[in-house]
Length: 237
Image 1: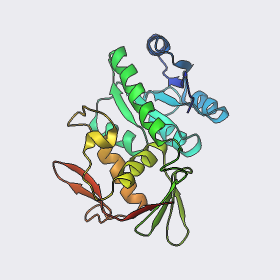
Image 2: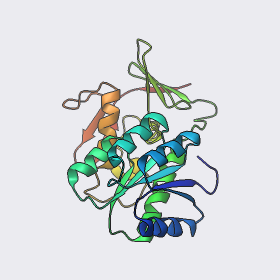
Image 3: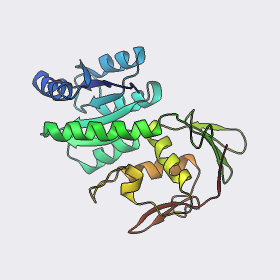
Image 4: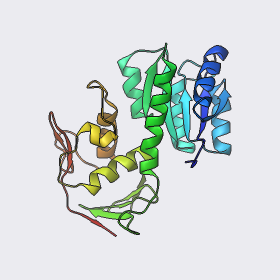
């Protein structure tokens, strides 16, 4: 992630809305580039990975969900979905595919800026940095987590890549094992909408990658009404 003036790619086929988004973000120091088609944005992201992409779902050349999927496969970065669709299924699917947040049109520009800042803060916390000196590798249960590479390594040597958001969430859990962490602590925000399912979706993705049965999870446990708990001994190297 850029140390300053993060680069935002805006995928929006309506010029007036794209202009409003870019103007609002530019006023707060973000560098914005506009793409009017999904393929245009994906090609630009391949040349240089942006800090964040704002993706509209209704596009002239391809479905926005496919754009989110291809971004995560080829140019992993933060993703904010901004769309006129207000369907819960779309919202959950977008988060399942790796989007970090979801805003429905019409939107308040100040809220958009706040959401972008919030997402980028999460990624900054997830960026490869030292944990306790030079310790960036955590061992827990039968897993090894390389924070610097955002990689999970199973006992048989099989490696699984995590998104920056997933790596940040797992890091937070690993730094405070066997303790209940609230949704606010996991998101790093004071106020979380009680209907916000982004943490639940990320927990679900982590459980799948950790082969943790969602019906009876043994590693990442749900403490109803309180939050989540990583049930394991953790050692950092």
